[in-house]
Length: 113
Image 1 (cartoon, rainbow, N blue to C red):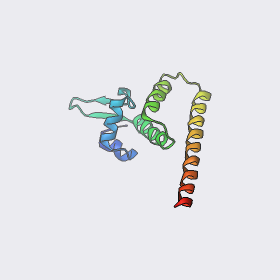
Image 2 (cartoon, helix red, strand yellow):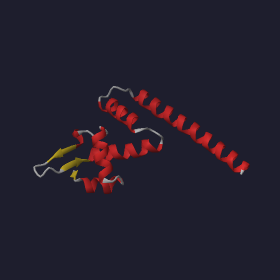
Image 3 (spheres, rainbow, N blue to C red):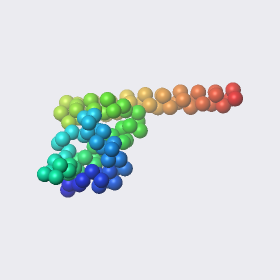
Image 4 (cartoon, rainbow, N blue to C red):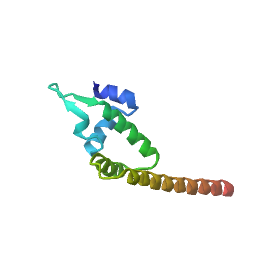
């Protein structure tokens, strides 16, 4: 199935402007859409999966630069399954540590106010 950018935005909760930005940043490559004669992009279902993955990864603290690099490695199949899991576990661990530090700082701030 193919869809225009508005439908892709509705399915993913990512605005059309953000989708275009991700394309310019190299997070959504040309393999995920075709350009038609009217110059509209028609996105494949894989674009939905990629955008939802980006949204989730951002929640875990991945930067767009990290996501671009990981996306390239993922697409090139240059990471083993174990490597993929390790990357995700490391990021989750760092995010958890950062969250805990912020929670402690907040508690200390409240105590001193």
